[in-house]
Length: 237
Image (tube, rainbow, N blue to C red; front, side, top):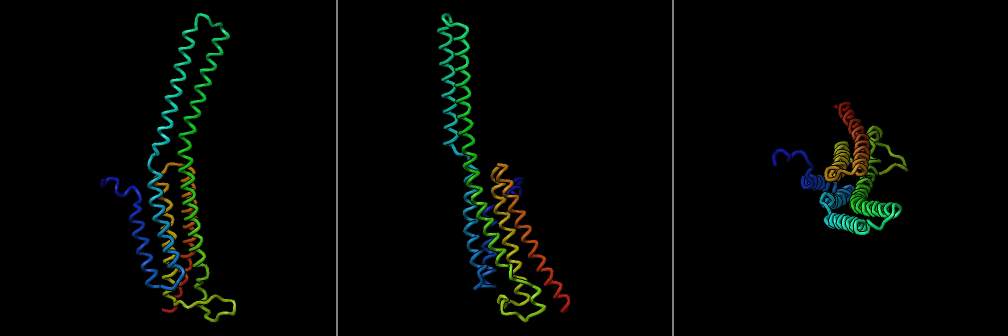
């Protein structure tokens, strides 16, 4: 167990990190909308952890259906061969060709049925995973909206206009708020990675990579703001 302990993401550890992050947000900004977003993210994380674990398990119903189709196809081929063998003496060359063509058509028909059943399981799981990833992507954009008006340059000119958003945070509080947003975005990327860790579907993996690129890009914008605040601290020191 020790050899594979750090080779896979732990959904339980991600949930623990999210719960601690929410506690920090509530303690610092109890009335902020970001606290509600963090609660929604925890609910989504619980769903994703359970959903990814379910998708990693093989669906025995589909496997059994595929085995039944294989057995039915084999039985049909055996019956066709027996028919040709019994009536071999009275069959012409054209009848032989028609019999072989029917056997090949049966093989193609049942082979296509087996392929459809096996890929149906994969396509069903893919659709479920993409729906969950879309949910994570939406929350990432919601977090970005919350940090959008948190402009550190407003600290240089505290004189707002009539159209300016209300800004009551201190320089320290603004840094913490932005840092919490960046952490939430990073954890969204880890929740998405649960699906790539549990599945080997190329479409799902591409969708996970897109979400990680999205959260990384949004987080980079936030850290640019934090860097500006750090520069202001140095100027004031």
